[in-house]
Length: 629
Image 1 (cartoon, one colour):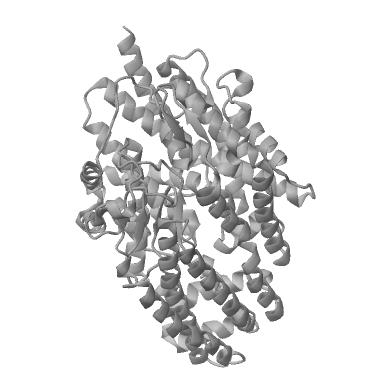
Image 2: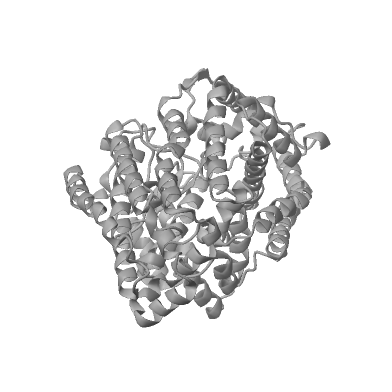
């Protein structure tokens, strides 16, 4: 709880990760997929009518907020009543929103659930405007007064963290009328993201291509994810060209959408008197902007290790010139690792055994009790995420499973998010159960480390081992380097806009291509990047999530260090990590990681991660050299 104003968007604590999103069912309809592979959303509400009844019950309570006006600093009891009321509204609103949101994600073409989401956004935007007095009114007192209230009213203790943070950010809190305007502005600031989602997932036309075998297919995000991993380079070239050329047709529209998001960020930043949009995004979570800049600087310093990876990729593919479109291709011939969903769940359960019985039993419960929606269906939200916003219920995972090893990894990844939500909700009181995004990706990438170490320990065949080792290296590419590449782009476009420079689709493409060329060593002849890849920025939904992507990279470096400690069997390391998973928002994220054993203000996490990457590359080159003899 960063502020006491409510915005329905904030209730959807989904951790969205764009990963492979096709499946062996061949896009069956939801009716055709067995129930045990689908969410049981009746755990939230038994029906749409039950949802409507809950909304009708909640709506009259929203007007009650005004009775607290002018009372908040009179006594600890008055303050407690207001905060408990706020928690009650927030919890109920979260449940309403995720039901509408997740139903919408199952078929983004279904405007019924889109309408339900919009209804909630309007309702709670209006409520936020009415509740705008709460934070400014509390801040009319001094901290000594609030501390005294907490001492006299022990039930206020669960709100201490949020109250302390409120006073820490006091200089960026506006007057009541201004906070009301900021709350109402939420109705329009979310439009770019909403338009992007609707157009990208539901309305953008799919180009038709003819593959090398004569088969004709339409290329959307699912098909692109599938065929970019094809072993047939000709098919990859066909699909890449059609897919990115299609994006280029809508360059201007995508440019307007993203520029709208950047301008919304600037509006919030300037309105709250921050020095930059970056500071506005990080300061409420007490994350120094130096950590963001340090990430970009350290990853740029580590580009030689990334270029080594690209050279290994080129060597294993046996191509004269490595192209960007080759990056997802299988590098080991005649190795087609396929895992049914049932196999994947068994593997993941085994891999997670170092986490102890309670952790593994909860993962099994998630699998058995339909917390997971497994396969893609027409209109379904692409990618994968975990949503842990139902405090009194359980988290949910959306997948688009395609029987690939990457899908096994995605399952482990999202289960990491789910376990952090589950244990935080179980351990912490509602006001501090939610955790910041800065730590959100630690639990997910931690699980990927455990999965890799389990899998690699079971393999004897050199070719299969090479395939898994390269897949793990691809994680370094995708999570550390690619996400930092995105973070550098996001920072650059905001800096350009804040310097008064207008942004268009062409501008975004130029900035993006320059960064990609640097990362992939184009000038050094390491990788060839076709011009149409300049449109890839339009494919990334995370740019609408306010400086989110850098946290994938920082979390990845933290998780490698933490997982190595747990895998030694040290009970203290496991205890510290489980305490981290259960901590929710009981402390600031940088401090939570320090308690767990990682200092993100230092260069050590990056150095350990680069060393780990080089160790994997040493093992790959050792096997390649042996096979060459």
